[in-house]
Amino acid sequence: MSELLRVPTMAELMAEGRQPEILFWVGSAGSYDDRAKKITKAFVKILNKANVDFAVLGTEESNTGDIAKRAGNEFLFQMQAVMNIEVLNAYEIKRIVTCDPHSFNCIKNEYPSLGGNYDVIHHTQYIEELISAGRLNIEGNTFKGKRITFHDPCYLGRANSVYDSPRDVLKKTNANIIEMKRHKSTALCCGAGGAQMFKEPEKGDMDINVMRTKDALETNPNIIATGCPYCNTMMTDGIKAHEKENEVKVMDVAEIIANSEGL
Image 1: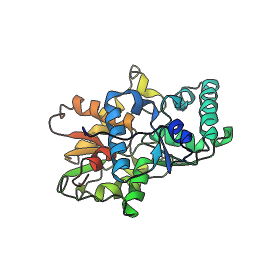
Image 2 (image 1 turned 180 degrees about the horizontal axis):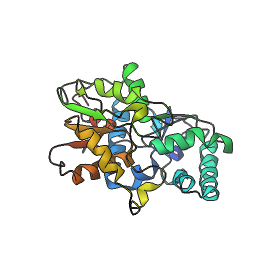
Image 3 (image 1 turned 60 degrees about the vertical axis):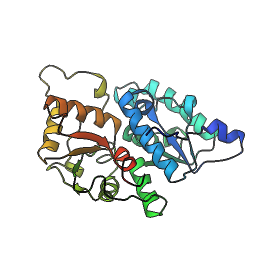
């Protein structure tokens, strides 16, 4: 993806008197983590290809406060949330799309009580919309015949019952979608939720990501597909623990679509 990607900011659009179709909420991982930045770029490539009129907040975007809330610091969460809500409301944002299920869940379900009411959707849902509307066409040869298993992010699946969109999008690639024994509502967490991403397992705890990766490897996949930057990190580490990094790839749904033939 060496081509130049168009990423306008809300400040730029406001100066032109324009309102975008969607605001792309990048999230902390997608902004700062080198691996997650690739997911961000893949999704922007898709938006550019579909000629979506979108914008980002850029330097005006702050952490949603999700991690603080999960760690028990409600005061810090509300400080961060209110600051974001003030910015979003000032721009009269109506619809938000994000690649991060933690941001998705937080803005969708926890911002309304603080005055932030928006139509919030996950990037896999939006990609599905673009395909259904005929704005995005995928030629299914790049991944045709590949075995792909999808890991359900907790904050997308069990917390918000979004199970079909990621799978329906992946099916457009003509890959073989293989389900793990524990999937959808019974899927095992990757181990990063509840702010656990930023701490090592406590003494006596098992490495949940290694266990979850084992679930995925039992399907004999070529690719483990994810829909969350934190899941991507945990599953990648799990692959390394199983010494399978040369055999199995971990890719976000957006990366799979962005690398499909025709895009």
